[in-house]
Length: 453
Image (tube, rainbow, N blue to C red; front, side, top):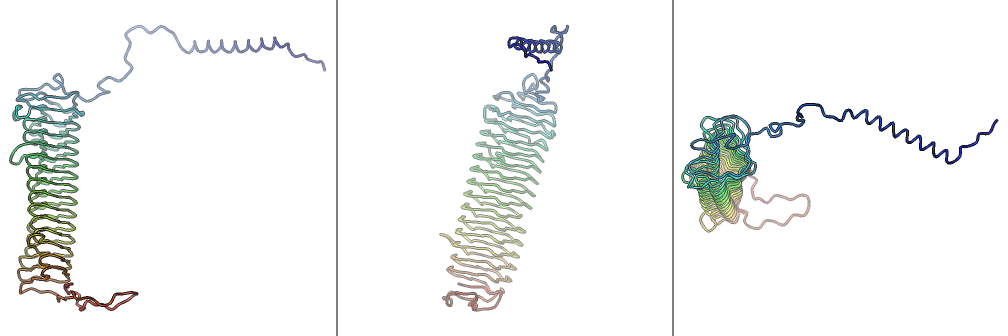
């Protein structure tokens, strides 16, 4: 086999460099071929991005897009989504924005609509003409308007969301029927009569709103409204006021100059707190009140007329009574403590079951439970440290399984009633129990016995 000699070192280096140079040249030629011609095509350059109408499909509120008329600075006459681009200052004798179309959304974009107060005249920040529908106002501030901050009362199916309204001459927000008001704040609106910080029509929904320091009511709604998770504080009228067939839930109502919550017939009030209102914590013609607290109210805790239920409520330190119900009502599972008058007072044909009433008549005169008319059932209640435990004024009542302790008088029962034996076990009991069984020492085996202990 012939022997092959390796190339000289310099020749090997030159061959390697020549190969690399050839590859680089080929890459340059390939790249040039892919780039195409360098000269642009003839004619104008066409846009490649989205037009402004697609980037911002809403309509800016301006003198060009939404020119006003004789009584408005801006007027919306077509359905669509509109928005503010800056703060607005009011003009004498004009609404800020007038809505003359259905299907309109106005986003205040966090800006302020500031009016001129009384100088502006009876004009609103945002005003909807009669008969319009589906109007939504959201995300901003309205203040110092000559009449209402947001007035949608003449429209229906409207919504106000995340809007703060303050210092308007009559009311903050007036909603139409079947509307929605949510996450709003009304403050220091002035006026007389029925005007409110938030006032809504039939079938409205008011959620997560704050109404405070208004001269009228805080929140007012008509038939079939729902008011949820709202706060109404320090208003010159009622905290929350509704008409028939309304529901109120999860609200905090404090320090108002009239009733905390006032409803008419067929209403349901749940899980709400009323404290330090000048009149009643809750006043309802008829309805169901569940899981509510009424404390330190000026005229009483909870007051209803006939056909009502009050279940699982707490009434404490109210002037006058804790709970008062009319004919054919039910009070069950409630606690009524340290009220100036009676803990629970009922008329006739009521059931008063499993309640706890203590220290009523606090610096006044009161009974744990007081019935005025006949045909009541008073069963399973605990009354302690009241002026009187049970005060039964009329005839035809049944009194069973109640216990009284520490009262000045335990039982005051008029003639003509039926009651289980009243067993006095105030004397010391028998020896204590240490073990798994013991003989009973209630001094009776009657299951309907009432006890004094």
